[in-house]
Amino acid sequence: MSSTAAAVLLTLAFAGQSFAAPAAFQDLSGTPARDKIAQLQERGIVHGVSETQFMPNAAVTAAQGIQLFVNAFDLNIDLLQFVKAPQATDYFANADNGAWYANALIIAANNDLGISPDLDPAKNWTREEFTHQLMLTIEKHSNLPMIKIMPVDIADNADFTKGYDGSIQRALVLHIAGLDSAGKFHPAADITRAEAAEMIYNALEYIAAHPAPAGGLQE
Image (cartoon, rainbow, N blue to C red; front, top):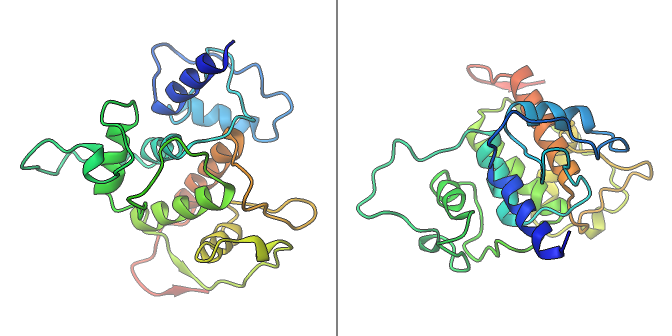
């Protein structure tokens, strides 16, 4: 498969294109999160690059990550009214209004996900970028209970971009994200499709298991 064809398939995979009952992915045998990915596939949240291929080690672009958030948390603009039809470039100057991701960016902007207007949709998201945006999304739209945070020791916390450490700490405490065997998070590494899917799965599981109370701080 050419690199161009692979890129197109990856785009469709996170764009939510699905035209038949999903077949089991055949390239997840060495992927620890394969059962979680399979469950997300069954729920229509993630899709393969073909009927049997997921490409778990491929990087996730910003546009693909945003589409994944829209899929996972069922975000929409169904109840909004606009004076004129919105365009992705109304919110993100570097977007392409004719691209597959345009609607997802419009939905994200109107659901206040805290995404920078200078977003580059084609840029690979790092582990810290994806984690930060994921935590902003679920905290904005899932009414998570407030909890007291005991910071986790992270061996490479000096590598974090300023402003992302709080999101990463919350993701670790809630077991949405994890550290490697050396206690490192690898914030600057590109996040893979498998890693992104596993974090989405963990987030949805946490939300389902911990509905927010009527008020107050959980111990």
